[in-house]
Length: 294
Image (cartoon, rainbow, N blue to C red):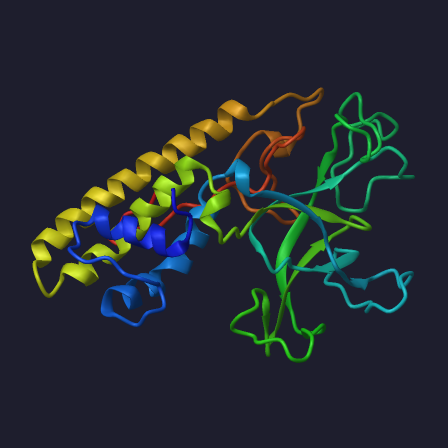
């Protein structure tokens, strides 16, 4: 199986019954231009619509500011009520959660959930973050924009995610030395799983069907668009079911962030559950060319 973006694009052309294939997404032909304009946006939206296992990534965050003033060479301006400000990962499609382990810390970071008895752990069996198989507790965080810490000079703003002349996207939390678990933007189809690849082909096909068929047979293009939208929804549904089946949901205490999913993060909002591989960021609905969402 060929694993290049051009192969995905040609599969999408096959799906809409287009008579000609392309040689490269950047070749400049009309079909290639339409596909190229839709490809990147389709990829990012699809990555956000389910917690795809293959795209799960854990990485340390780059510290920009410490409100306590105890960290050298970084700023101290951090929006209230947060303590630390980090740069948003440039390859992040969807933030899932920030791990935090209570053991070894003198107290819960300000603004994070604390049990009725502060001396008892949130979940039994908590160990140090470096211990294999030990659970960790998700910490509160929010995504924001900040003009106080401009990006590095020389960065091409329209090519680097989260940076602009008006500021940069940041992660605010009360966790020191934080790392983030997130859905990464994986550009290479060779690392996608089969379900995601099928969904990407169908989603891309639904976006380009009408533009490519408008001059030849608009009615046929609309029919193909509707068909591919339905296929994409089926693949997304399967992915979300797989996410639920593969998750391990348990805890020793009832806490607010375990009660709901798909709610916003911030000072008052929580979603998801704790535990190995669990997801806290919720998933997004996807908008389709026919005006529906799923």
